[in-house]
Image (cartoon, rainbow, N blue to C red; front, side):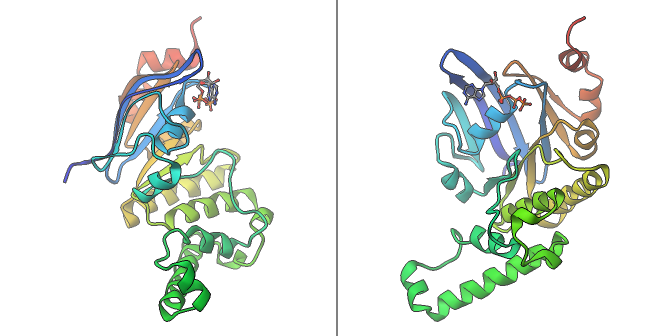
Length: 255
Ligand SMILES: Nc1ncnc2c1ncn2[C@@H]1O[C@H](COP(=O)(O)OP(=O)(O)OP(=O)(O)O)[C@@H](O)[C@H]1O
């Protein structure tokens, strides 16, 4: 089995006359935390949207476990074990916390409409399993006491954890986090780092993230790709990236 889980090569995305991403290439290994950083407008979100099936790339190849996923819809990409969170948390805000976790499993529950209407034993078993999974994830995320709250009424940090739980409940192999630390306080950021570490160790999930919080990125990433003007300028270990003169220049701009 290859070490590489996600492989991106030659990825290019144009919006009309604007070349947002040009010839981007990187791999994410199994169990790895891989971060994409770079100044505003560097093309990070565009790469994310191409990988997650939200944009159809102009050209390039994206493979998950050796299978091509470029051009597939986000639903189909999710079936390959790749799921994501959003920069602005996206939950069913009027549903309860528990309901959000039940809905997330629907595409994966092994049943069909007829079984549902007839409430067959196999349907009831699937429903019971979905409930057990949801409760397990509420416990894991420290959200059990909020199970019956409307998701939209949770504190922001809890909403972010619920969004991650909603991804994890589908047993992904690659979890994509889009600025997971945005809007969190320092303690919540420390909790997030610990959470990402546990997810990787206990569930063997690889993590691909975009993040502006440098201390978080440097603390949790195995490797970091730095982008500027739609292209990678370097990919390497946190310490190498931190001290790379090209990276410093990209962030500070030219004097
Ligand atoms: N849907 C779109 N239509 C047109 N241009 C877009 C679209 N999405 C992104 N762009 C442009 O592509 C370039 C890259 O944007 P992108 O959002 O990928 O950067 P980013 O690195 O994620 O920035 P930030 O850190 O601010 O989120 C920018 O010039 C942006 O204006």
